Length: 213
Ligand code: ADP
Ligand code: MG
Image (cartoon, rainbow, N blue to C red; front, top):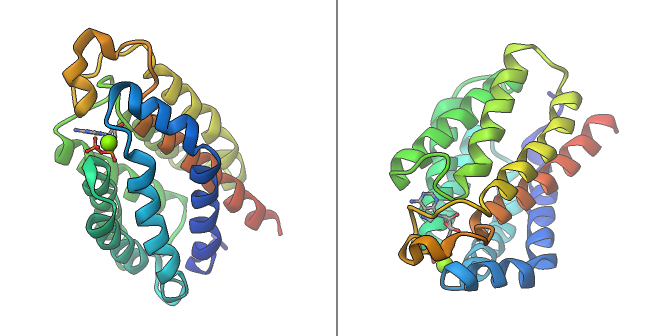
């Protein structure tokens, strides 16, 4: 794959931009069933990553993910900080010393999501970011097994992420702060699922552009 960590500054800035552009909507979602700080938490981490972005370009993917994970853990705060931190540290472990391709990435992402499940003691259907991350991981695993072209795989991800995000609307929250609301958590999209979807869609655009150039 011609996608190297040299892309990290663009990837980080695309993510920051989409979170910024959707800050109001996401904050309203988090105020409805959470405590309203999710955007602030994420932006704190993204600013820290932006400050490190030129350093990150000098690393291989596994080392970059390790550094990203540690930075997110120490800056984001909230449930999402430790969960995204765990995702990247675990992806790093899974990809260490391997040549990056779709198979390695899919397997690392799958492992990362498994670690998030363990860390959050949660699974699909509990109205969290996992309702986006799990179907995306499954799609990547299937594409790698089918030896699908990377361009096709990337194209398929936004719809999967959006469907996952939408699916949280009618779910009952059983993990995180939203679970305190019990039945009243229904009818609202989970803020963490929304930001996971936004980030995946932003990443796909940058990656797809760099594949064709
Ligand atoms: P906090 O809830 O601690 O204020 P954030 O607002 O930054 O943290 O993040 C909240 C998001 O984290 C939720 O919308 C949900 O998607 C996700 N989340 C919370 N708890 C869990 C969990 N146990 N497993 C998976 N995701 C979770
Ligand atoms: Mg919160």
